[in-house]
Image (tube, rainbow, N blue to C red; front, side, top):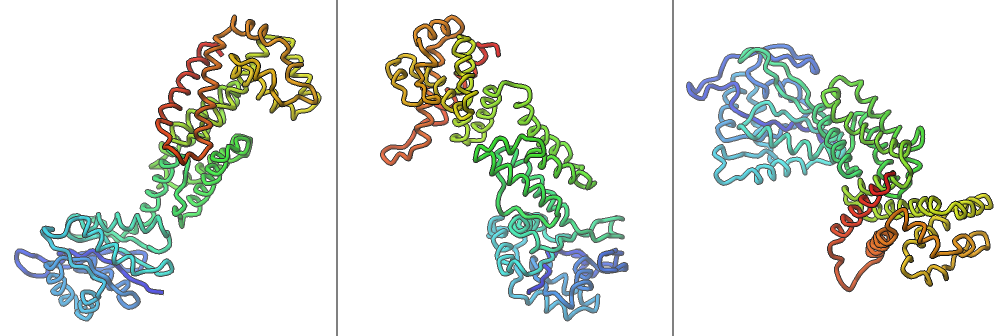
Length: 434
């Protein structure tokens, strides 16, 4: 296992105008039991890690020359060679004429790529040419996402008294917190979790695992597992509440509460609304997140449930027959829903509906809906049957486009077509005053 300190090195400790080493200032580094006077953060890191870690510097030519004088004054000249002769070290041009920001990021990435997952890296971003510490931090975020244990510490010299006193603090926890919040916001937008998100903080890891479970269930349309008591949504909320016990996490309490509110809204849909309305709202949410196939599935289920409800409102006798079929077997529910939707879907082609092949417990559909024309007339008095038929058939065509692989021509305007289906269906639902 390799162990290294990657240090962004600047001119700290050296007076460039008078070309001399500055006076020592106080540094407190509680984690390593250091409390004393040093020229700069580099000397502190050498004191703390010089014996057991290799040092990899990122520096300008001027910074290198300055630190030679500083380490000499600190009687640590042997570390100058150890640090600046490291072949992994990177010199950056101060004026940045040739080296773009992209190239500097590339150089930092080159350093990081020399270490495996089991290696241990410590980063010091206290000093350095203006943007270098920021670029180093960006690179650290990327690698922290890929492997949370690779970067053990990220140190920063926090100024307590200007030019006089500093405290060395570890900002690793804040970096992981940033990634955690990034994960939550990303999830709220698209219901997915990047597989490479990993956390050393166990409470964060529990949240990630519960969100991955949500992702699995939502993408497989396993609604019951999400909304039931003590189901996945409840587990996510419990795990989020646990993170809020951490005072540092409370800074992002609003963002966490926004996600909790969104998840509770999903549960509440199925407590307060007719199921076909709840399915419609779910279909809209999934469409907004570009899960077209999942979205169309919820829309079709919604239309099936709505069709049955409308038929039963139009004809009490049919409602009794449906109930009779359900009393015989709950398995009949699927065909009742399919029958109801197809009644409106085949509204202008009743011969096809009459020859429908499926049965309800050995009785043909014609037993349950005996007079199609009479039922159509009854329904037409309550709502626009043709409009519902058009919406159902339009939805079916989009579903067919999504569930079949087309090798002959590209499917165009699927999003636009789905948007039209959702708009038309929503307007129809609003017209019913449910």
